[in-house]
Length: 205
Image 1 (spheres, rainbow, N blue to C red):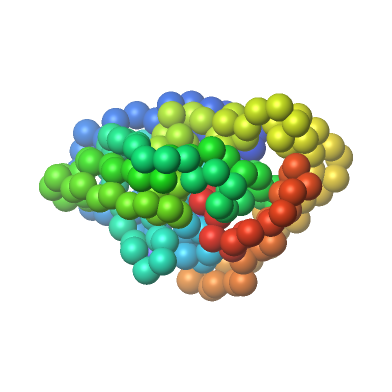
Image 2: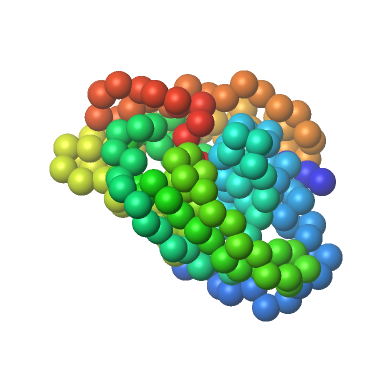
């Protein structure tokens, strides 16, 4: 297994809908293994294939001891809104976070690396991770779901010169563990709207 480089906001692959997986075999299995290793290395709750430069419908997840992957996921959501229960961040938009309106229940169905049917559902943070990662496969980032002042603040922060320094510093820090299984403490997430920060180390990525 190896730790992969994570693409940052501005990379076109993050805005390109991922293709359906049609070949199940050792290459796909290796990709899922490497994505899982990378997700654990950066303390993420999830990771989508486009975030490591692969335009395929695959994501991994790891929340509160529940870990797995889904290929060609189909998402269902329901239940009440989670409201401002957790700050949501993204490994591809480092250093920022905001409250995102997500459904409290989600279910994904799809395949595993061998092509067998899988179905997994969850509430709370797990449901948030499923929704966040499925968005990635559609070319959508969490900042696209922000509105009003939250969206303005996020875009303002991303366009600032200081943010370029954040992404550059993050890339350098992550490069130190590429190809290894080295694990670091999570990087603090700053709420872009200046509101309270909660469970920053549990944000969907």
